[in-house]
Length: 425
Image (cartoon, rainbow, N blue to C red; front, side):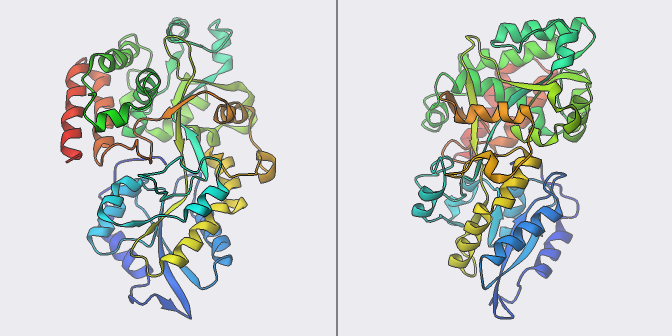
């Protein structure tokens, strides 16, 4: 689910490659099989082998299909899918996109509701106007705050912060000991936004989980006083020196390494980080929810999933069968759990059923999914009705980077309202 800006370099060549690896003949029949194009993305955790193996497993359960894999040039699947659509090469299957960016144009086909209801713990987790375009196979918390237990001990911190004041106190103690309190991969816009995602999800959506729907109805705005107050917390962290001064130059991948090797004490990040926790030092890491003023637990929750189906796929019924097979394949979920920190959401299954090896911090983090707590849509990450309008994610990321170096909170939030007005038209 990680979103990053689309890399322009090489896109033209990849479009040409797409044409070559797709069925290309319009009929889609090769050796008696129907060829479907499938847009995926690669990360260090979900590498080429993962996709190839998962495609092979689902193909075995879907007679008559041949899958031609397309790899996005970055993890911005939405941006690349739009480029393919504009060139007349919209894929038949699309992994982990944001449906709201495509449904309005009639580009996606919903899954059969009976199948969705029968197989998933939260069937409507990523429902969009009553339809499900991506099976809710897994979930994530975006963000949790991960912390280094040894560095906490070194700074005299005995327990994880439970409220905002305790969080500030912990930051102050860490800084006083010469320890960088909070890691931030600020060079990558999505990673730079993590503290803001945590603050807004906890302080604004935690008090009004319908805030995003109210924003669509123009009942609230980013420039409102309560939002300004919340976002000023981020400026407090910056001006207090609780991030490294050079954080805007730190790449996301490097931020993981910096945190896991003890360069920083805390790391707000989506729960996919759990797949990067070093196994030999895993017991040295813990997690806690982004802290609220009162200490009430708010969980910024995202219903994850697998692939969407093009409404214009060569064979939509066959494409849906492939999507169903892929979504329920235990080996796929095992890989996603162990390497990408996914929290499984399939009915009738426990972690043990997937034969996975996970860390204690994974188990502690996953426990929040099953608890009766205040779950809200993580702002900027939801793929359901709470998804931001197309283009707002980029504006949100830009605001997060800007607010690292400038104090104009009200001005940046006003820009978001202006961007919303344009995007929602």
